[in-house]
Amino acid sequence: MRVQLRDTDFVPCYDSPILNSPIKHLSSICLIVSLVTGCQSPTHERVFLSLAPTEKPATKNVRYTGQYRLYTNAARHPTTQNATPILEARLTKGDLLGFTLSETGHLLAVIRTDQKPLPNSSASYAWTMQPDPGQYDPDRTILLVVTILFIGGIAIGITAAATNPWGCSICF
Image (cartoon, rainbow, N blue to C red; front, top):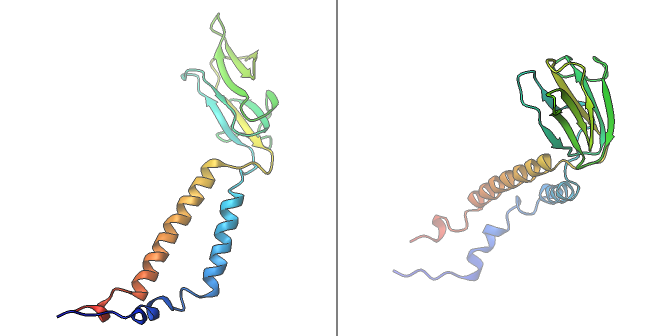
């Protein structure tokens, strides 16, 4: 037995209210705006790099332009509200920041190319960052894109299952 399909057999499948709803258009606009603008970095002060007395000193390039502060033996999440910084510097994206050891083994704070001696090599230290507003956070933007793609895939799957263009109505 051979079934012959007409062009009009698929029209009801693609004329679904789900596919033509205002929500679809609003979702499309939100998706475009989110992808174009990305996600911005929060501007609250938070730990960028910490050093315990038993850890090896390290340096990192900063990811954001902003204010960076060094605290010693401070709370777990030091900020200017609960501790007093011993060093403070305004850095731009890509500048070097961290810790190193001098030739004599004393601990030094690294700010760009400057090295400043720290008072106690056996203390714990924490560099915090407070990014300037309006800077993009690549990690958050990637998470946003992956989430949108995942939700979009589920929505397409639900829509395809609901409209079922190749369902039993055209089966043998």
